Amino acid sequence: MKAQETNRKRGREDKEKEDEGGKNSGSAAEISTTTTTSTTSKTSYKGEEEATCCVCIVNEPSAKIRPCGHTVTCRGCTEKLMKQGDPCPFCRKPIEGFVLGKWSSSTGAAGLWPTSLKNLSELASGEGFNDYFRDSFKGNEATWKKWKEVFDVLGIGARKGEGSLIETQILRITNSEDLVKLRALAKLCSQDFFNDKTLLLVVWRRILEVLNVKEKGVEKNLDVIDACAELGNACNNVRDFEDARRYFKLAQSGYEFHLSPNNSKALDVTRRLILCTEMHVSERIEKLGELVERCEGALGGENELMLMTLNNLGVELQDNEDFEEAKEVYERCLEGRTKVLGFYNKDTLQTLNSLGLNYILIGNHEKGLQHYERALEGKEKTLGKTHPETLVTVMNIAICYETNYKDYEKAQERYERALKGFEAQFGSDHEYAKRCAENFMTCLRDSGVDEKRLAELKEDYPM
Image (cartoon, rainbow, N blue to C red; front, side):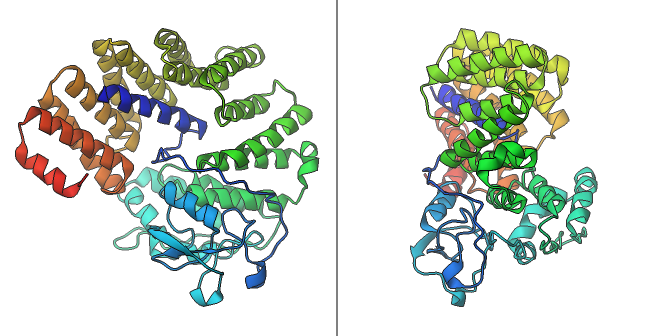
């Protein structure tokens, strides 16, 4: 039962990850959806009476974040940040709680205001910001060379060495026409090693505002349509599904008017709208099935968007316990992705992993384990042995050995590897590390082979 529940949760995360463009969120915690109004407000920061929340850019900052003391967000956005485990948007320090009160300049708080990103330079010079890069660039020449170009575009000076490996100074963006830097920053925020969803949301709100086109004219400007689609993605990433649907619908109407209903951009935003809209799973399965047919008819059976939609359909069928149908869909998707993208593409490996999970849920543990092992081999080669997605597959294999084969020795070995990897990547407070430690302790209790290690885990991870 533990394997089924844990792996099914992983299947859900696979769908969410693909919906986010393949970025690892690091958290599956859902948050309440708070309605936010238009993000094209022309409010500027001149004083306390005109300050707005740096996340929704609508409400007045009213929540004083503890323990850092910054007051840059409203109550609703602060609650969202806490629930999804995000840090303070200003200093990047963990949020332990908040108190309500009026914004005051005496707190020293300053946020990312809707008409200026000048505070990014202050944010970039903080210790918390540099922590994002420290482990990512240590000994990783390929990543360094790739993003050095992006840093140059943004005007960031960076060096490698001990201590603060990245000393950044982001240019103060004051030219409303300079969208290249903003888009480059959005690209940086969405990468696996950075993955700052809150900052990404702020940047795309700013991009849409800089375009300075009212929403009622969205169908007349393709740049605005694209920005609405990206802002919908950013809202979806922080589980603000109400605003995500709002911007997806704007983008959908714009693409269908400006391009055509069967254009790939229109079809993709339709897919995302289906996934973030509350409906019964059977209704979502029906809509995704219809969309697969539309994609195949308009784009062909070997199109990446069609295959992505097919994979989403497999996840929904699996969640609905239609395992045989899900198996057929996953196998078709795997065949297509292997042909179009190659076996070692991360999306192909994701489908292979999902197919392995489906076999286990059916009861074919041997075939499920074989698919997990193949997925692990591919992820180790493509992503590396310490990548979070690789480690999740290692943990799933451990669960399989423990639950389905009662091979506690092999399970313990893989739990140990996954846990050390998660702790090195994220720290012991991260959801992945906690989940792995919990499963590991259950394995040790059931086997009774290593009481000393069990005692250590109990001390490090008190439940």
